[in-house]
Structure formats: structure tokens, C-alpha cells
Image (cartoon, rainbow, N blue to C red; front, side):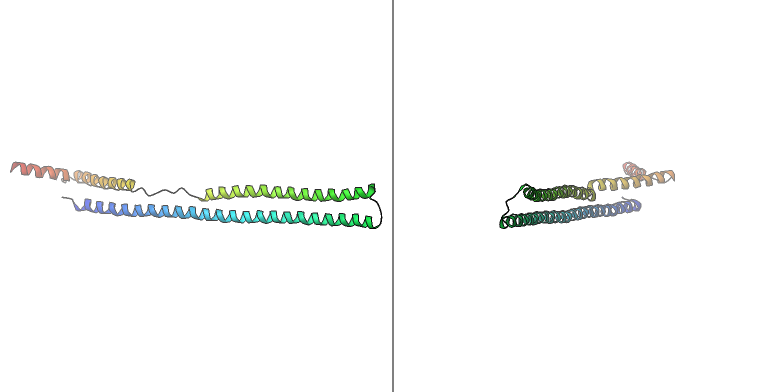
Amino acid sequence: MCDPVTAVAVASAGLQYQTAKQQQKNVEAQQKRQNALAKANALQRYASEQLKIRQNIKQTKEKGFQATLKARRARSEFISGAGEAGIALSGSTEALLANYYRTEGNYKSSIARNLGINISQYERNMEAIQFGQEAQSTYVQPPNPELLFASSALNVANTYYSLEAQKEAMGLMTNKQKSQYIRDDLGSS
């Protein structure tokens, strides 16, 4: 027969087991939510960076196109003005024309260099976003009911043996002594 203190200890251990199991499930769910938020944040930042670099590339192409149009217009006006005036292109006018080409080339080279810098920065930003997602993510630890059960069972056993030791220290009969007494009593009858 089970004494009331042991029954209460078993019931308490069962309740603690259920509570701890639910807490582990709640922690796992929270960890999964944290990882989902980190992923959503990273995706949003990826999209923002991609939009920014696409706009930058489009803007760079437009600047290059406008520079080409402007240079062609200037050269065309220069050449047609000289032709209408009946002037053949001399060394100095060809040097001036070459200057248009050089200026245009330097400008386009500068635009391309700036775009390269922006693309490198974009790649570093993408790596930083990935690192940020990893830093915001947590390890998902699934519930471990087996370990909880073993812990609860050991707690019940510890409570039982502590009570038995207290009974023995106070000079009372332990459950083991009672069982032995009953067996001995039945055996002598």
C-alpha cells in the first residue's frame, strides 16, 4: 500500500513533468518564431539591396547614354560648323575633337569605376545581411520528454527514500520493515 506522502510526491512529479514538457514546447516554438523573423528580415533587406543596386545600374547606364548623346551632339555641331564654313579640319581642330573623345572616355570610365565600387559594396552588404540572419537565428532545441520523465522518476525515488530515512531516524517503521513484518506475521500463522 502506498502512503499518502508518496502518492502526493508522485502526483506532484507528474504535474511537474507536464509543466516542464509544455515549457520545452513553448521554448521550441519561440525559437522557431525567432528564426522565421530573422529569415523574413533578411529577405526584406535582400530585396531592398537588390532594388538599390538595380536602380544604381539603371542610373549609371542612363548617365552614360546621356554623356554619349551630349558628346555626339557637340562633335556633330563642331564638324558640321566647320564643314559649312568651308574649313578643313586642321591639327588644332582635330586636337579639340580628340579632347571631346578623351573627356567622354574619362567620364564613362569614372561612371564604370563608381558602378564597380557600388557593386562591391552591394556584395559586402549581402554578406552582412546573411551574417545578420545567422546572428539573429537560434538553435532550435526540440522537447526531450524522455529526459523529463527520467528526472521526474528520480525525484519521486529521491522523495521516497528521503521519507524512509526520516522514518528510520525517528524510530518509526519504514515501508520495507512493514512489508517484512507482514510477511513474517503471515508466515507464522
